[in-house]
Image 1 (tube, rainbow, N blue to C red):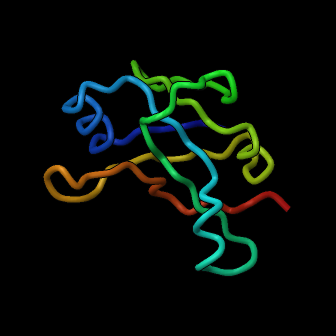
Image 2 (image 1 turned 180 degrees about the vertical axis):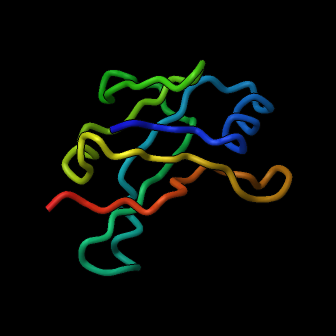
Image 3 (image 1 turned 120 degrees about the vertical axis):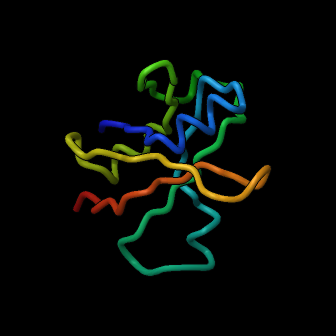
Length: 102
């Protein structure tokens, strides 16, 4: 997997003075939405237990991701992280559609 942070995400992280993010499968979302074959991701910056994550880097940002994500995504797949929202209600999200591994 290759993680890419777009300009909006980098600007957001710089403004908040953050240098690491955490990516997990969004298991709560599956109970309420979507269909078979879809996976949603939760992108946050609040977790202190780095030992349960795999690590990737993009520029000066450390990206910690849940190892189970590799079950869903091909090794050469690019994952683009962006930011959306207004003012203090901005958050990070996975911007591109990701075909899951069969």
